[in-house]
Amino acid sequence: MSEPTIFSRIVAGEIPATVVWQNERLIAFEDIAPQAPVHLLVIPKTQQYANVSELAVGDPALLAEMISVADQLAATHANGEYRLVFNSGASAGQTVFHVHAHVLCGGLTESALA
Ligand code: AMP
Image (cartoon, rainbow, N blue to C red; front, side, top):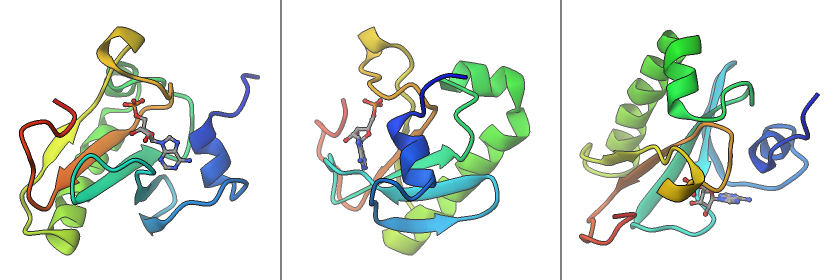
């Protein structure tokens, strides 16, 4: 079994995070280094999928649910408009290999994760 990712440790409650929403399969929390006035991460609780491509193949319904949650969070925490970013691969800026959606909103600048 692979080592728990930092996000799995958040799911397990071993590392603190500001959790804004969760259900059985997904959890959303504030990014520790926000790149926008509102910067949330939406992740599956399982670390089975390292990136969005794996998730799209392995559980497309869960990917669709992540996008729906992003939409709802943007409506709750900002004006409903948002940028959704999935970094996929180290050379694309991915540092945590546990699939996650960055939800960026609340008055974006051009540089927000660009
Ligand atoms: P990525 O570079 O796309 O893999 O995104 C990883 C994100 O996780 C970065 O935006 C980090 O700021 C964020 N991050 C890393 N550790 C934590 C943590 N303990 N709590 C919240 N966000 C974190």
